[in-house]
Length: 380
Ligand code: ADP
Ligand code: MG
Image (tube, rainbow, N blue to C red; front, side, top):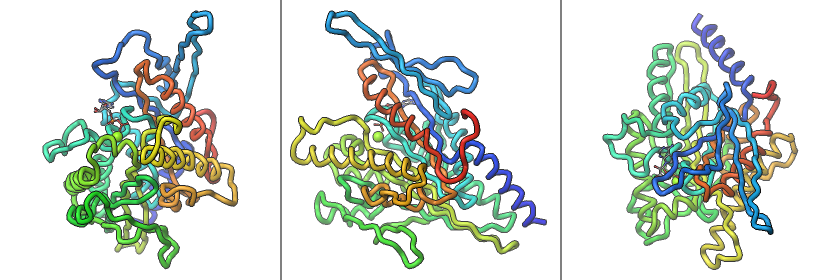
């Protein structure tokens, strides 16, 4: 009977997921900063029942000094206005977290220019203190871990036992670094952190050599984990914010479950990715390290778009190896049953309108992709 119930529960869950499509895009607009001029905002959210539309108006002056404006409408699976709370955003994500627990590979990305709210969405405030762990400011990572931990406790009553192993990596200039390595290991050689390599294990899984994995055996463990990651970032950079805006961070949780009553097992992966700032950095003005960083970011963000598009087209060759990020996520992105969500974060200030437009256009491309057989039904 237990087995039947379990199968039914999962079947229903899958049916709901398939209807929604396996790639989804949510747009989140951050609040205006204090210094921003509230007049003439380029971003408008038309009132619509589904909260899934956003318009961006670009105003420019023509040669005669006359100002002209053009409005670009966009539609995503969901648009969150600037007053949306962390809780409201997480509510729309929590089903995907459940999917990882049910054995699916899941990727959740935050895409957008620096300052658009990616880290706020994925993690919460930059420096979380232990007191914050129950607070309303928490982002997707701590909320996801909390939900998973609570659900595994409940599932234990039905015979499920889970192991939850976490790793936290940073990809900077196309090198992979371990954000959970003991601080001493990272500081030994001064600024240079240990660089890690990707390899294929004996079962063909993509893994990272010598990576630190942490048993996420309590909901509170995530605070320790985020704190250590923050510490490692500080060791590695003179300007922590600057550094984090130029690197991707990838939090991965492996969820392996075994049911002692039914003999079933499941193996899911949850990847939560805070991408490097998407701002167009002109190569012409940069040189040296800056130029190298710029090229690495442009390349890996473009490659992410290419991989998603190639998967959607069903191409035989998927260019995973063109960037460390897609290589690392190869299994999660490419599996037939994988689920992907991209947050496109936008800053509503007038000075950001060009970057916001670029971000919304990138997200629209991603939104038009569906991987595997689950085609989107209708418009939503
Ligand atoms: P990014 O990671 O994209 O560079 P951040 O998440 O660091 O951007 O956000 C930049 C600033 O804006 C931070 O001070 C952050 O706290 C604030 N911020 C971003 N989004 C929100 C939001 N939805 N509500 C309140 N503050 C936000
Ligand atoms: Mg950030």
